[in-house]
Amino acid sequence: MIDVRPFNSLGHANHGWLDARHHFSFSNYFDPKRVEWGALRVWNDDEIAPNTGFPPHPHADMEIITYVREGAITHQDSMGNKGRTEAGDVQVMSAGSGIRHSEYNLEPEPTRLFQIWIHPTRPGGQPAWGAKPFPKADRSGRFVTLASGFANDNDGLPIRADARVLGATLKAGESVEYAIGAKRHGYLVPALGVVEVNGVRVNTRDGAAIADVETVKVTALEDAEIVLVDAV
Image 1 (cartoon, rainbow, N blue to C red):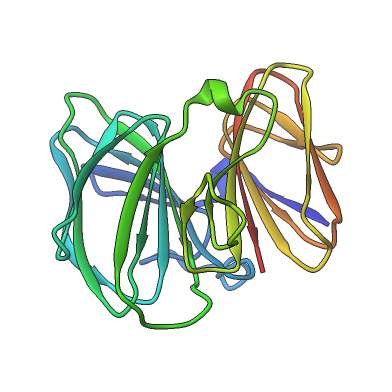
Image 2: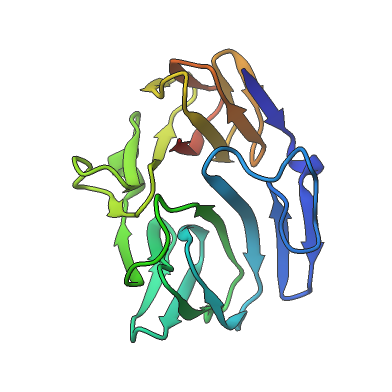
């Protein structure tokens, strides 16, 4: 099953400084059919205006992955971590037993990113944060693990979830496959471009909820940049 959620059907909140699209119920947007997808709880498509951002606020018991598409985001938290994550890079924050953090766009242009939240395998634990560059050239024609809760995924940033976040860039006509397994939940979004997922068309920034599928085959109908979450 592949359920396409068109971009124009997503939840929408424009706060002036933040223009957000919600793939799942979030804040004032609630859709009982789109609360979560397996362990995947949030996928927000955010545009943050220059010199604005999210002031310090708390989180607990959530794995938060930030995929920066354009611009950069500057992170600071109550553990003393601070860093700037720019386009092509990924940051992860394991909220654990509790952490406060801020995320600001200190750049002169808008920052556009995907904010992905995944339920951890167990509550509590020491909070953690990390970031890493993932050059798009290294993802050309193949999936690269960006974040993972699996011990053998040494190249991705660690998260405390039965999940994996992957990225790929494809030229028009190229295909890539991923063995997800029929008992797991997949969710794929093209950050750029148009693709077919097992023959189903998915346009730019649409969401594709994937279930009961052993293998995901993604074919680019035009040059594309894709992000896929594989979760329990």
